[in-house]
Every structure is written in structure tokens, then in C-alpha cells.
Image (cartoon, rainbow, N blue to C red; front, side):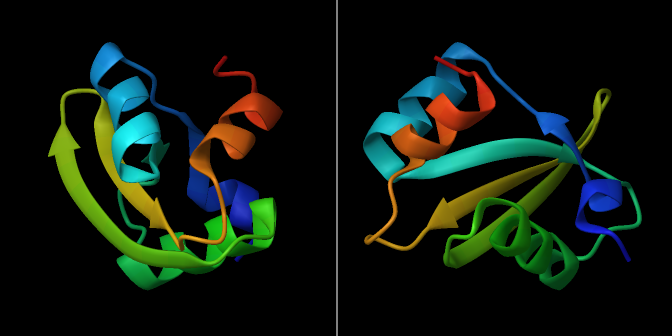
Amino acid sequence: MDPYDIVEHPYVTEKTLMLIENNNSLQFVVRDNATKKMIKEAIEKIFEVKVDKVTTRITKKGKIATVKLSPEYKADDIGMRIGIF
């Protein structure tokens, strides 16, 4: 499956901005049928990073994935590339 079909768009709130700074994590809205493994592979392929952990939750807005990056990669840099800042 195409990684761009799995990851729909970034999810940005004040809390997610704190996650970027303090936890080296990003949040994305993903397809409802996406598994954690599919999300991890998609993020690694799209942004060319290594993902340590993926957690998901279901909300009214859809399925939200929190992606924690490996320490050698910075969530700030990815945030800049996708236009969060």
C-alpha cells in the first residue's frame, strides 16, 4: 500500500506542539484501518526517519497516530518540512 494512502495529514494543536518539543513526537491523522506497523513503515518511508514507537487513538476526527522518532532524528526538523512551524 502507498504510504501516502495511510497518512492523511498532520494533526496540529498546542498539545502536539509541546509533544514535538518535549517528546520528539509528531501526530498524524491516519486511515481507520491502518495498523501500527503500517503507520511506522509509512512514516519511515515518507520522511526517511527511524520510528521508535507508534501509539494510536480513535477520536471524532478519525484515527490519530502519535509517532515517537529515534533520538538521532528531530521532530522539529520534520515539522518544519511539513509546514507546522
